[in-house]
Image (tube, rainbow, N blue to C red; front, side, top):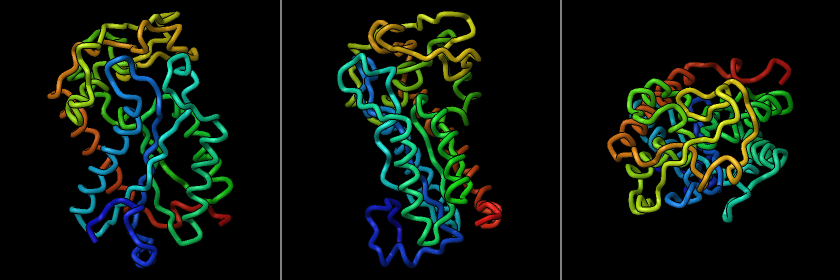
Amino acid sequence: MTRISWEKLTWSEIAELDRDFTTIIIPTGAIEQHGPHLTIDTDIFNADAIAREVAAKSNAGGKQRVLVAPPIWWGTSPHHLGFPGTISLKNETFTNILMDTISSLKPHGFYRFLILNGHGGNIGNLTASVSKIGEELGISIPALSYWQAITDVLIEVGESEIGGMGHACEMETSLALFLRPDDVDMSRAILDMPQQPTPWSCIDFRAPGFLNIPLDLKRDSKAGIIGNPLLATKEKGAKIFTAAVERISTALESMASLKKSELTTSRY
């Protein structure tokens, strides 16, 4: 069986999976504005693309079976609602979707999961959600945002000043130029550096500020961009994508050695 998409399997194929050697990646992201030059599915597209490449790489390497669940398209994006096209979930709705997903799969013996996130606005909610899943469902599920695994690579390839990799920026535009250039309109990309309230509230994937002031992109940017997409290139996107896949694949390989007792709480 070579398919990696959960929804492309039959129930009987799923029933035959070895629970101890099957990991299910759940991509999370957002449907939100990404400036005038990127499409509104940027965050979930990136998370799903990385998840699929991680699964393909992991499945080629050994007996561990990695499958990708249908992505959770929508995230918590109230700070983007000033622009048309954004669809934002309430925090509790996002958490409930995750809870219901795990609740549907756990009774059939699955306990190895990874949430692979592509939207910065989901991070706080994911921290709370995996804690709730552990408390109520008894499974310890790791969650990561792909850029957090490759900070050194972003520093290496980034040419913009700090603030240039925030949203629809040098990083995300580079990924889009590599993964799907036909969906990028560079003629509409503009320099739109963040209007940060203080030096400690900078929005940048390489060096986020420690002072977390809630964003409002309509207020804090000119065109829904935070950063410098004009410095984006396909070559940078290739390096970012490859590094994210390699780091996350390595993490999954390490997690595969964990026993069930190390991923489930003692009271379950």
